[in-house]
Amino acid sequence: MTIRVLLADDQALLRSAFRVLVDSEPDMEVVGEASDGAEAVRMTKEQHADVVLMDIRMPGTDGLAATRMISADPELADVRVVILTTFEVDDYVVQSLRAGASGFLGKGSEPEELLIAIRTAAGGQALLSPAATTGLIARFLAQDPADDGDRDPARAERLDSLTGREREVLVQVAGGHSNDEIAERLEVSPLTVKTHVNRAMAKLGARDRAQLVVTAYESGLVRPRVE
Image (cartoon, one colour):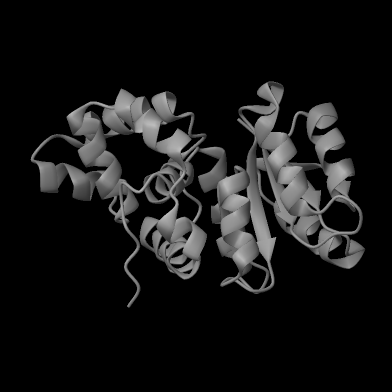
């Protein structure tokens, strides 16, 4: 199956470079280019994109607002947004994950990393290594007094729908562990872990693994630890 990619960035030169790279791969194609967030949302619907490479800072509707709109649209439930950022340690990154993005990637990444990111996001997995995503979220939540003292009660209430085992698995996911590592820790099969992860995602309304990490921190189930 061909992965349909939409490019959203206000820099035409950068979009052109991404297009050449993506279109060179046999399993993916660029289906459109947008120069602002509003155009990105519209074209995502029109072109039935699977993955949107979204810049954060764009004129008019920025990437953060566009990501929130895509994530909130039931018709776009299968679309994955990959945030492109100049600064990988950036408060906007965490805001984007909260808005529904599947992960983030620095604009200075190697071409192969971008291609891997597209395939990973299309597969519904966390974009970067779980540990890297977890560490970034933990760092920013720890620095935000509001998050530290006033966890999201709605997210916390939704945790009540999880079984004890699903909570255990969620804690492990938020700790940056892969399914194989969680299986070893809990002495179950990787398939069992995958089932628990999928059920937790469905109950919590998480689009992918990255959203589970955000939920675990914002609900207070997992407390940030900063080195």
